[in-house]
Length: 79
Image 1 (cartoon, rainbow, N blue to C red):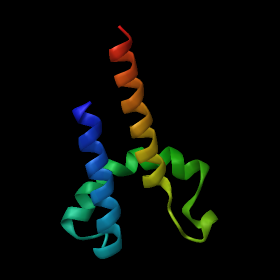
Image 2: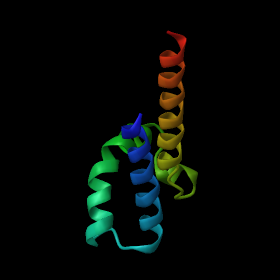
Image 3: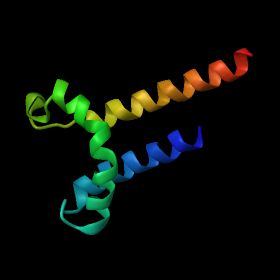
């Protein structure tokens, strides 16, 4: 569960850095190397250009992480 929490923090940090830092600067580049594999399947279904250049893949990844967390907690307490 802590892995999902850390992953959420990395996705949020990368999204914030994408607004304030160049993609070629080190922190943003390193976070992108971690998060881009998560975004790729979503971007294949919903390309960023399709929504006026808005990339909603971080938002969808965060939603999926929340759903996974709730599912894991539900399974843990069901036993």
